Image 1 (cartoon, rainbow over the protein chains, first blue to last red):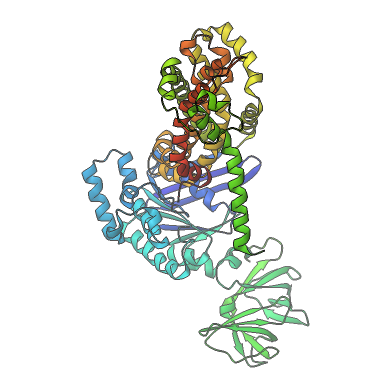
Image 2: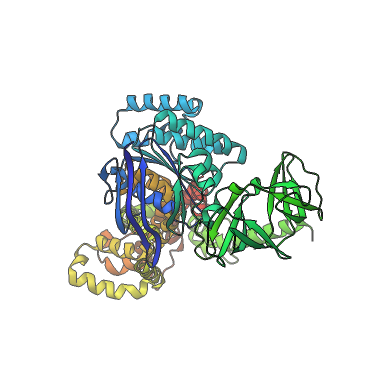
Length: 355
Length: 275
């Protein structure tokens, strides 16, 4: 695998505000990388720096082996899909698609041919002579995608392209974008705040917070071995349960759930007396009869979607349990909570790093 | 009070106010058409008994109005051209960049709008005399009008540019265009309506401009209609019908333009010309 995009020591300041802090990231050719994080984490800034729309204040960016740090966007040969799609309102779909070709001096006949080809693959053939205002949200999204793929760029950049679509269409477009990526063998960088999008679409997920890369790796590695509490809470839905605990002797930790301390064996070694956070994903806990699990807790409330039941316990902090299927428990019932050792994540109480 | 009743009442009030506002215009047209004796009749007649249509060609010939109107057109077109070119550039920069200097610039631009022409004319006159620009009086007036009306244009066109999303420009940049190219192929076409409407408003303003033309142009053959009309007036003027005929010939083209374009002007000023 050759590296297609490389950030080395990238910094970005807006006046006194430090938006990107020493970002090092290399992206393999042909891979699909998702930049994910809460709003204001710098993911969009990182993408816009790659496109050349933001000037970085330190470090270097290279695309296909060429340092592009000082180059304007037009010399970087990347294509970008914007959140608002940014379709040119005064141009027809065909003109929108071929704008970049026109700028690069491609002849009219070739432009028409290219537009027809791309439109055929993205299902826009019937719409080539419409204006963006005459299209639905999904169709506009397709035009934005087609405009990016028409010129075979060195990388595709996506800036939350699905956030303006309704839920059903979003799920559909997720698959379609990924299929398109595989068919073109392209290198894609995809910014999203939705961890599900990142997990389902990407080969490599980069989690950012406050301008720092918190963790990067394959989606399931992030899920299985989150490097810190932030990543653990961000990846996975509903979010991981965190229980403050104190390390006791014999490889155990004492959890305080508000009423009485509970002794729990932890799979890692830590100095006795240290404060730690025990993390358990809701989907890794199963409900049992009282006394048959690791400990018992009363039910505070339940929500059922038909296929899944969400159960919250009346403890401090509360625990969320996700059960597949329907579960006949009601508020106030005492239930046992069971989970495997492998499901227990332990984080340092102060640094919040994985132990 | 019911909804329809109130609406009707408001409509009547609006019509009444419009009638009061437009009465001088009506009086101008009918006075032009009256005979000498009818003009001074008491009580005045509100409709001429014997319309004197021949007064229009007569006054046009007598006063050499072709020359005056031509000068008005030259001055107005020159001002609009100058303002459109410089003002569009200035408005774009003021719309796209946000920092202290841009704020200072915007403040100064708005300041200029506050200063009345009659106040500015003395320093302008002195400056133009010293630099020799006064040897080209119509050019001098064009410059003076451009300086006065530019702020109005900039403020309007800046708002238009701000309604063009920055992302469109960024998309054009990523698509391979330069900033200048993106401006010409994306921003300018989208802002076209706003620019055109502002230019039309400036043209109409400049077409009727008086203070600078009166002060800076001595030669009769270079004066615009506004100054020509003023020259009609004297201490013992009683040729009201001729003055009104002159005024009618002068303002009718502007009125006609406005009526024809008013729908576009209003929509261009109020709407985002985008969606």
